[in-house]
Length: 159
Image 1 (cartoon, one colour):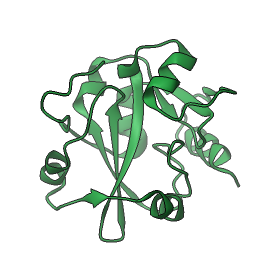
Image 2 (image 1 turned 45 degrees about the vertical axis):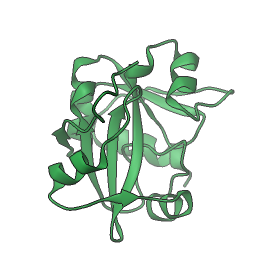
Image 3 (image 1 turned 135 degrees about the horizontal axis):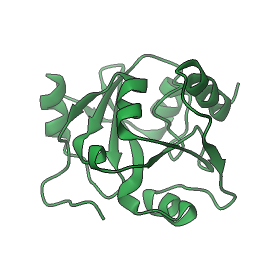
Image 4 (image 1 turned 90 degrees about the vertical axis):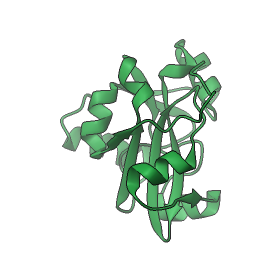
């Protein structure tokens, strides 16, 4: 099953609307996604994968924000380190640029950036670099069991 179908099934299983949309030009970055959708880059709920040993840590952040790993570590109580694209694909089943907040091939610990809570709607990757889905930050927190924390790098404001 491909990544988009895994996301579609995860959304359905959680009772979330199937709001997946496809964009031929792709949405490889938050800026690309915002341009394709016609929303502010801050409304893009980007998924950044870190690792703690072999465990996947997914940070869902506002598209205009950079993530402070120290703040992520503080929220979780343990250090995290960057994950390379090959490891991300092997562990999650998603390629970088299409990592969704749901439908992973493994258990995932999720941290949701508090800045997303002020935005409605938000758009998240839906399993490929050409698919996104519309949701809310509250729904993302519920769907993923996320720990909500302020993880924005100081001085990095939403665009």
